[in-house]
Image 1 (cartoon, rainbow, N blue to C red):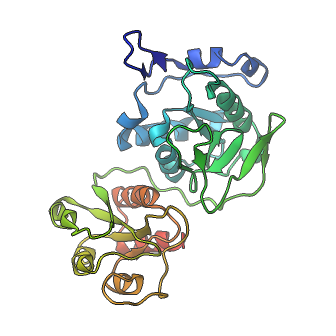
Image 2: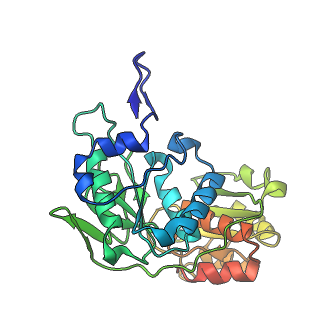
Length: 310
């Protein structure tokens, strides 16, 4: 990021070389090859950007000890998870960024980059998929979420916790998350959106995009509940396209048969054909469904994959 002299704030401007130059300790850590893949705000990234990046990583993973990716934090958790779904290599992939830009006191970017490089070079990180390094914590892509808009400790893993830490500058992996089988790089186009249940919502968005959707993720109340007026429409959609039921809470699982108070309970919705999203929060569930659809998976295959996340 670089300051705008007109006082309009900061915008992406630093190259990979600039970022490395700000961390002189890196010279003693590894031999680095620098690549400027995209130079856009995180909010501008598209799924195709991440697909292209995954393709590059898959081609290069066999001739590198580890890979570090830096990006804006707006979509960092989604980049990490989608890469984790598409990446086929064993070389560690560690994603990081900064919550404070270089002009701010206590900028955290240099420390995060150093931690990411050290983790990417760590033999214990091989074969475990994509990690996120922030504030001396290491998070699995499946669990990590940005849970604060400005804090340097914004990245957490609700319901799971970090899989490791940097201790005296060295990465320590505490436990492993079972790695999901990679999904073939998407070749088809597909449209998947998220709709969130809110108090008293009429769910008008359930009707408007119905003909343009290939899949839908419902961010439901609590353990998987929606307003009763949504139930029939969701069932109708589930007869046509995959509809995944998740919780808007961001942690914990959608239940299967605990509540049965009628239309809109998890028992009712699953009975209408919705797919249980398990522990996946809505944004991750959307990316998984999107990747599966674009790879050509049918309803049976989609249900099988989501069943592993309960």
